[in-house]
Image (tube, rainbow, N blue to C red; front, side):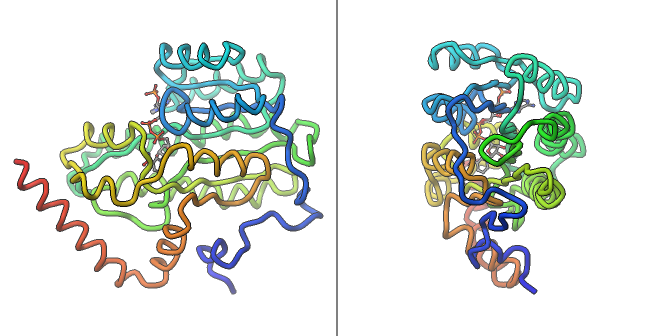
Length: 300
Ligand SMILES: NC(=O)c1ccc[n+]([C@@H]2O[C@H](COP(=O)([O-])OP(=O)(O)OC[C@H]3O[C@@H](n4cnc5c(N)ncnc54)[C@H](OP(=O)(O)O)[C@@H]3O)[C@@H](O)[C@H]2O)c1
């Protein structure tokens, strides 16, 4: 039996079975309808730009209305902005209802809204723990619960009724020091994606999880502002990729749905092996832990 976390490495990261999926045909992005949560910054905003350039019709969702409106203006004003706090279930339901009212159908639902928190796991307060799950996990599952029934009613377009894309992280496969709470939310998203993908296959709905490494967005700044730990610049810059690269990988997976997107091949292999050799990875993580502790001590 192939361990689940080896599927990507062994080349099984494709929808192959023609009986379940239209494996070969690319979906036409022109006039495709997409809902993007967390569209006011970072990965979500860049995704909106790249999809808009390809002719997709979008619903842009986040809490900061001014940022959404500014982005929409930049994109020619042809999209719809819905102010949404995904941590509130009623906002997720309203987002989906307004998207259906405006676009008529949803081809791809991108659950991207989320944040990080740099903090020791035992010092993460119960409130911080609940808050991060409310946004990263329940913000995802509430959008899925409201959205999937609509996707199921779609008539197939280019072989697919629709797609759910969940922006998780590389740390979904392995908890990382100072990101214990965050890693837990990203693992939860991955589990949801894996189960949902099999369940929705017969409905011709693709489910794709996305696993970036550190990406240059507002994420790091947000994560530092919420916890008591700062990453040294050397660590911040070591494993970084551009938002443009991450989003190009996502756009390809919207065109041709696939189970997982790992914009960094090295992280895909490393994190998969981590599942097989946890003790070895612990040793590497310990060195990282000590460097961060030392850097924070010298800044105090
Ligand atoms: N950057 C990285 O290193 C990295 C790596 C792996 C995975 N990711 C994942 O990628 C996703 C996007 O992150 P990013 O890097 O683009 O970070 P970012 O630049 O900080 O953007 C985060 C986006 O999420 C939105 N958001 C946060 N809380 C929200 C809430 N309660 N309701 C609605 N929207 C909310 C923010 O909008 P408002 O503040 O306006 O609501 C913003 O648009 C996250 O799920 C993150 O976990 C990021």
